Length: 107
Image (tube, rainbow, N blue to C red):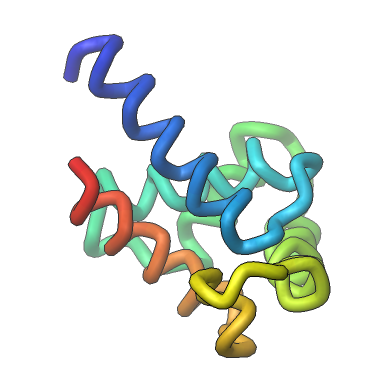
């Protein structure tokens, strides 16, 4: 994958996160989880969180909790009727899977 493709993927994910009211402080975490699942469709949400935790030397549970906080914040902050989290209260796992689908559809 070229650097331009990587940059486009990151921009697409960032735009999705912004559109859904995910606070910027969670963007790196959520991008990593989303891109992991986009690259490995057989990977589960929990395994992607554990992999992130290992890479960053934190507990897997803290990563899952941070994902939950990010999505809960999105529920509260999403203002646009086009935002997925404006319309539905998705679990973090379902939200991430929707982000993966959006990424696949954009690229």
